[in-house]
Image (cartoon, rainbow, N blue to C red):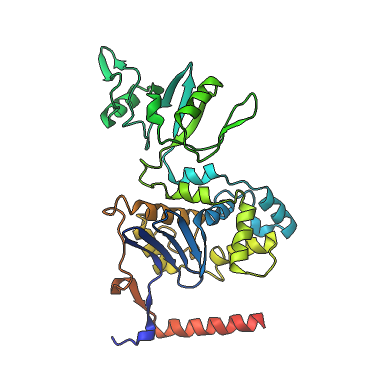
Length: 356
């Protein structure tokens, strides 16, 4: 059938582009604000809301209000909303936990142990055991030898709780949360700070019992999120919301309720945002979800943004499973029927009349 050029438009959905050190993800709705995530040679992840560019961790911290909501914000007054938002916490550790593989380290009598997870990803495989572990007479892991994936599987079958590791193998490990001396209250290592040999010795001397770590250099995600958090000076969701408002409405004095409703309206309000059934279908296929998952839901959820960032960051190391798209391919375009174009014009007219 014949169509005219104005009927062709980019299909809603999510699209990824990768070129050497520059990677880009676009969430394109049928109606509403576009969102882009990008990182470049400087190793910082940015979010672009409309045409305004901010550090992606600021956006992710603001999304924490939707990832772990305290109450239903749509039913409360502005004064209660302001109080809830001001008291909300979404720490660096909460953001890091969304993307990185986390391991638990225990310190006991001058020795360093790593807990054996019952399942899931772990960095224990590849570290050297400081002490052998036996299954009857046979060695599952030998002293000074690297723990293989097969050995890790055997340790899980034996229900081994923890393995003593070489302290030197914690090189490159980064603290997930602040590590505090419980007696004095002194912060020994701040969240998202590398654990050096000197700091580890200090923790052993001061009787720290344990802490959580991640290995950004060895993780498929890489160091992008950790580096971006170091650049990000904002620590609370309320400050993240106000910063986004200042970027989107420069010169307009922000308040907590207006900042909240601005971000809510951009992605979580069906009157202003519509991903559409086609967009949701393409989104699900790209993200590896069931095709008809939330097929009639026109809105994005906070976890959708997390999934897109996760996919984008994994593209560099695993381009086979995390592939880029050709945005100009006709498979990524769709035809708007005449009735659809008429409907859009009617909606625009009614919205103008409503505002007037």
